Image (cartoon, rainbow, N blue to C red; front, side, top):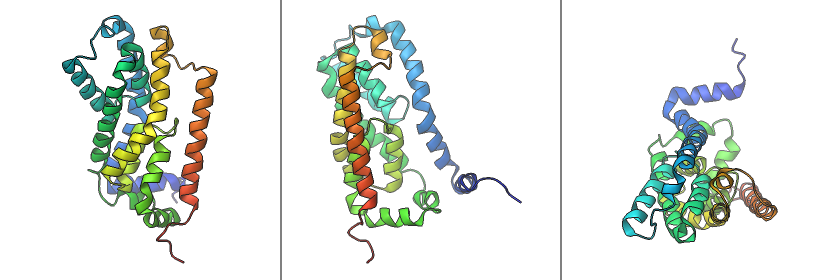
Length: 239
């Protein structure tokens, strides 16, 4: 008799149908943290040289944007970490390039997620038929969900990219609603780096009172929005 918890049986079933789905979930859950530690140590050793780079020069700006797109789009580092480091090293003149980078990274992460089997979401939600039906009913309202997930300071960028891909929200929605939703949390992380007095302060997780208040406010908005999305019936809901 198989005494394994149902959740393990479910993931084993998913793995048997498409191992790459579980590989992708583990990738976006674990790798950004490892990347942040690795890149953070390298930046700590080389920050004096990095901050001298003229970010306003087109070739340097292009290299920065491509680097940010690859690192964030492939889930190699968290967007929050990249925003903090950018703010410290280059200041406010780099903010537009950061926004461009995370927008392009959204496209990369979403398109890579769409490479997975089209029925992946059905396998994952197989034990939750009500959730599956709700998502189907709200297919045309996914922009709201994207916005409220992106604005959350605690939902990782890479994980949300994979979720959007599995939900097949549409690239245009991910780019537009994701762009708007990411702005507040990106601005918060970027400003903490820009105002940091040293590389140690920039790379530390310490935050001031006003930052905690803003984080709490964004979290409340996100939780309320996601809750509303999943509790209000969709337009196509069966009566």
